[in-house]
Amino acid sequence: MANPFRDMSVIMQALVAAAVAVVLVLVGVYLPGSPIAREREEVDQAVQKRTKLNQEVTQLQVYKQRYAELKQQMDALSKQLETLKTIVPEEKETDEFIRLLQGAASASNVQIRRLTAQAVVPREYHYEMPFEVQADGPYFNVLEFFGRLGRLSRIINVGDLTFDDPDKPKGTKYPVRPGTTVSGIFTAVTFFTKPADTGAAPAAGAKPQAGAAGKP
Image (cartoon, rainbow, N blue to C red; front, side, top):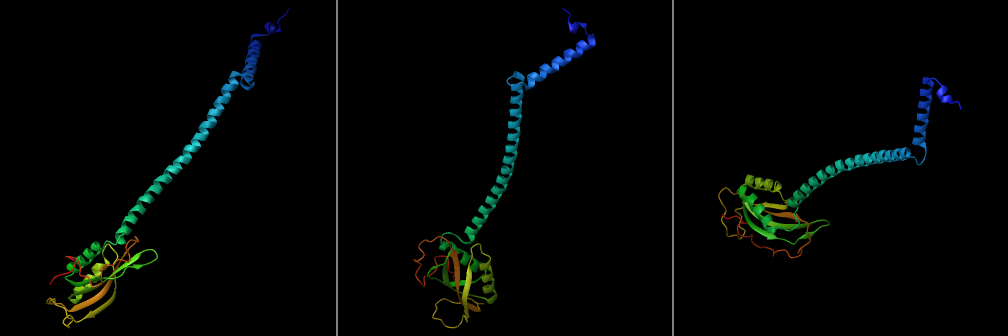
């Protein structure tokens, strides 16, 4: 029986063989269930997973950068909070307040004669802790004293200020130093935030603690 393939020329045989090979390859690639088709599907799935993972990594990088920004903001807010706690502490810290007051007076060469605690005043978000203060000294030294109070780390407001002649009799027993031209009584108010023992203010007319009132 004649074989048509053998009767073809070498070139035609090569072309037919190539065509058959291409058909076989195509059948292997696209025929469902074939090993090549399964490999191709696995490769496609792997590519899709890699693309999805790359997208997730990109999103996480954005969150990572955002986390760093949020951490910086939290650190800045924490520092601000610590500063605010110094300006307006949670507790009364009466001893620290008296120390700051006396320090400003000593640095200004002003004498604090009397420090009278008054009742704590509750406000919406804080508490006011007022003291009536009597002080004397040279006029410009008293001005410097008030300026120093305004620059302290803790907020201290001064109000109800009245001046008088230091030589005018007041029934006081302390001597007035040379150069003293002003004697004043004012209210120094500081603040705190924690609601604790707000009604138990020290007795009115109490003397400052040791080292809190200046001595002639």
